[in-house]
Length: 265
Ligand SMILES: [Mg+2]
Image 1 (cartoon, rainbow, N blue to C red):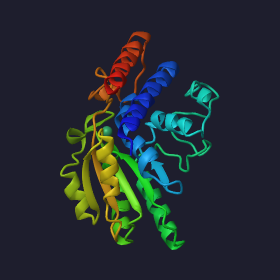
Image 2: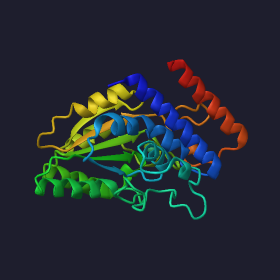
Image 3: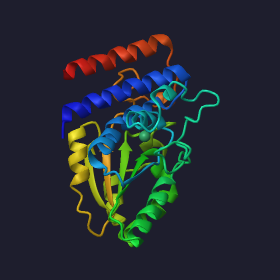
């Protein structure tokens, strides 16, 4: 695993995310920057070609689109049309896009769909895994906990969920809206193997996801993250859940990300 390459990749993806949101004048910038390191770990180091992925926090689609372009599934020039009228690159994942299996964005559904996929793979005696990335705000949906019970009942040990635990959702702090803690204990009590990790340390993410036992329990990694990671004036501010960058803010964001890139060397 070439960590330096992955860290550089992650910053480059953030730069493109900022650019397409600037050009479209809209986007879920906080969540996309929050999840970027997790997606890079998954798509460039953890997942095998036949593994499945669901972006349950579908609104944070920009980083996902940039990775699909980097993987050759979407033309680079098409990214320029993100969220423009007539573009298939709309603000949530759609099955019209190569590489996307599930349309998401109605929050709280991704884990249920992942359970169905994981069970089907087991019935077909296939050993592919199913990865699903959830936001922390969506854990307030009851459907998530129905799926959690289903997964442990059916011993879906080919299922790996990851929570982007930035502690913020569209309206503010998760704990003051509907409290999630003690989150790890809650998942463990539902019969899951639970691990926690720094969601911005790509090496730690890869090692954590590869260290699951894959034996009779579903798995969840709670990733401690910062919403808007990488751009200081966006970081840790729920008002940047969705936002628009004017020219000045865009240039400021690009300069910051360039400095991060230069610091790596
Ligand atoms: Mg959140």
